[in-house]
Length: 403
Image (cartoon, rainbow, N blue to C red; front, top):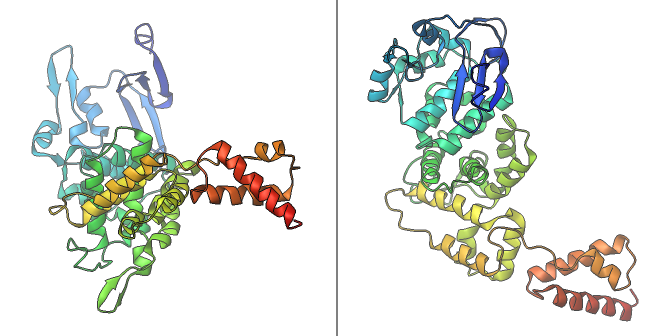
């Protein structure tokens, strides 16, 4: 730290582990350390920094071979005791040693590494992961790895398959239930809901917008969009159907997200997208009017997010035959015309308007404001001034009726 502070701004996020981050740069500086397992979880280690440790010895505590290389600046040579270069060139994800089992977080790191760097897990690494339990991993650590999969995974399906192959899918039963859940072949020739979800995730990854929050919300919604199918799928009228799976997806979505985040705004942004992911097609086919689009915007918050989820769903059904999503294009154009593409309609009639008209705040306020908002969604008025005229008529009519 003393050597770095005069040159860089530092974040001492890992003081106990001898780790500092250089602010504004994707660089961690770590003093070689010795560890011994002393308790449960990712932090259950006794740690002793050892600046005199040789790079070859320090590499033994790394997770994967591709992550165990070092460059000796003094000698100008690459230190690669575990064949990281070989595995990187061969696109293989291989654990370094038997010490891998000491930190269960490494399994989830393997999930996101495979997705981000296109690595194929070595059979022995899959096997050792099968022997590891989650061991009380902190939710925030699990969240970090899922976020990297969602935001950085080039092919998220690779990481999700790793989760399935290692048996760690059992820790996320909402996802596990998708495997083996059949779909109607005419509509889903790709296979069961698990296969469909993997293809949808890869489609989503091709169209990230570069805004981490927006991509995280949409990516999680795509991952969860069919979680309601296992509970609703049945064979009826000669077909496999999942009637009502959109609404049924709310509970498992909350349950799945609750395993690694208590971020309410994230959960509340994802759930409506799951519950309404079929709406773009439904409104397009029914030639829905402006009122239906405004009401949908009120429910989901952002139409543009919903269209991204629905487009990934469509691409995941027929990846090789996908030629476009006219329903999504129509909905985006309509929402933009109505100024509700990126936000729900804001009420034009507010409490202050009622007070200005001489009304006294009370229980009746909410009823009048709700009536005005519904009328606004139906297109009865589109400006604040027109809204005030509308509420004047309501007040006048009620006065005439003795209300």
